[in-house]
Image (cartoon, rainbow, N blue to C red):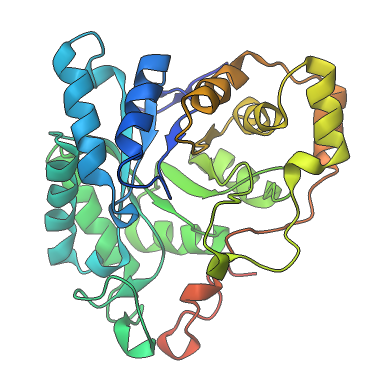
Length: 315
C-alpha cells in the first residue's frame, strides 16, 4: 500500500488511528495498542478533550525506545475559538504540552468557522466571530508561522470545500498540504478529490465507517449502515475480510489517508490489517455505485447565517 508523499519527502502511511469520541480512561490504552500493533499514524484534536491522556500514551511508548517519535505521524487540529492570529500559537503550544511533544507532523484548521476566544461550544449566534472579524486567511498566515518555527512540519485544513480551498489559496498564495473531510463509499466527493489531486493537496477521510457512535444529537433519522450494504458484504465475503476492512481499504487504495476510530484492541489491529486487502476492478466498480452524497456529519450545527456561515460545505 502506497504512502502519501509530501513535497519535502516526508511520507504518511495511509491508515491511522482516529481518536474522536475515544473516552478518557480508554484512549490511552487504545493509542498504546495501536502503536504496538504497528500503527505509524495517530490523528488527534484539541476539542476531542483527550489529548492529555494521549500524551501519556506517547510518553510511555516513546520512552521505552522501541518505537521512536520520528517514526510516528501525529496530527492535531486548531479549534474554532483560536482563529485570531494571536491565539493560534498558544493553542498549538497547549496541544504540544498535552501531547508531550516538541512538534507535530501535521496541524490543521479544524473547521472554516470562528468562535469568540472564550467560547468552546457556542450556544447562540453571539458566540461566533464573522469571517470578516476572523479572516481565515489571517489564521492561515499564523499557521504558516508555526511551520516556519518548526512547531509543525506540515499544515493544512479540515472540512474545507473546493470553494473554500480556492478562496484560501487566492488570498494567501499558499496551498494547504492536507484537507481532512468525511469520505466513504456513500460520500465519495469525486469533484473535491479531483481538485485536490490537481493542486497537490492530500486528503484524509474521517468517519470512514459511518461514525455510528456519534451522539444522538448529531444523528439524522434512518441513517444508512454501510456494513449492511449488499456490495460491501459481497466484497467482504469474496476476500474473507470484514466489511470495515473493505471500507477502510477503499479509502487507502484510492490514494487518501483514512482514520478509523476504535478503542478495541482486536478491531484496532483488524483495521490496520485492511492494508493487506487488494480490491479489484469489479470491487471498485461496485463500490463506486454506492455514492449518494450522504453525509453523516452534516456541519449544520455550525451554520449561523446571520454570522456569515450559511453553508459550511458550499452545496
